[in-house]
Image (cartoon, rainbow, N blue to C red; front, side):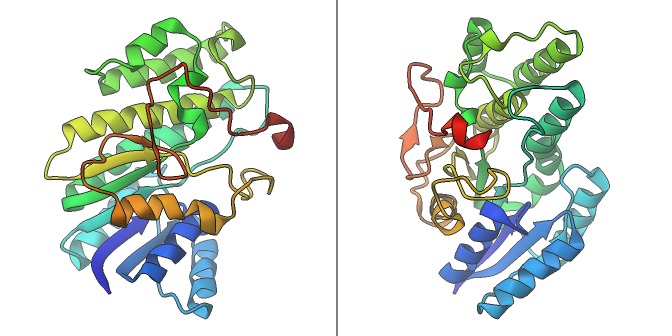
Length: 286
């Protein structure tokens, strides 16, 4: 038994569910399966119970500050701290190649802004030497951008949260003002998702620089996984996709921090825009 407390967001299905199952299988003592929908969350726990795994369910809507505060209070009253935090909850774009302001705002809010609220309330509960895994994507690599200004600004060693917020605001304003240019991106689809996940990967570097107490913060591309988000067209099973996140949570050397990790557990230079990382076949996603 591994005497640790783990929390996974958005874990009632998909990659999050797989991470929960593998953490339990590895013997982590207390594993919290959190989800926005209480019914789906409790059903997910029942499925795992039937397989001999016993995570704890707690309702958590990462876009709702009051929900996060309730979870914070709950954890404070029951545990001395959190050892593993996997920021997994996410949403995809409603359409593949077109982008609307409302959808873009929602995608960025769920995938990136929520991490800032989680950081505000949950990071103070992290134990010394805790591990944080921010689930990103291959779309979250800086090579998905062509805009030279943003490539240069986001790759700076002294990157700040303000830079990243300015980046997401620039994108949203371009949609709102009809000045959006597809030429600013190497991918020609899922633009809002790309922006949100680039923000996640970039902020991971900031978090690591600013987070002390031996805490490791890394971002991860879990692979092209067969989930509802990919319409079942992925290359990896949920079980296979859970391996790299759990590796970062339990096995990775503590020297791995502030990095962008590929689904095969290899470190990839996040700021190297010469890399060709077209892991997803866009034709399978349409």
